[in-house]
Length: 93
Image (cartoon, rainbow, N blue to C red; front, side, top):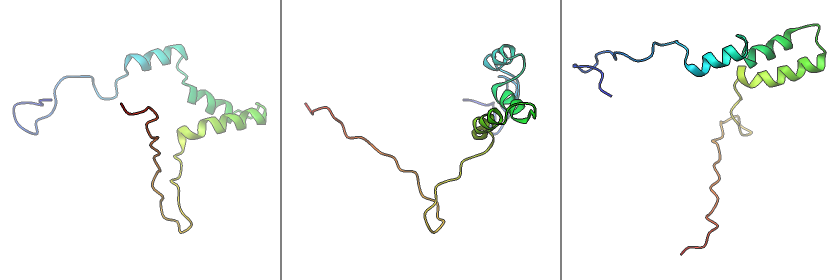
């Protein structure tokens, strides 16, 4: 994409950084301004709710707030992800 007449010149036009798109606006309208993560955190922090429900909300919200640790071997070195490629099951022509 061309940015301007000179190399390094700033991009012009387009959507402003931080502005909401149609999908985000629709989600916020449907949720009355409360997104699913906000709801889970609200229930989790409510001391009047049952402890079982609060624990379930904490489990559900955790992946959105905390990254998973990378796998490590017994020495503490990071193990690369394994990718399994299934062989072609169709007979060659």
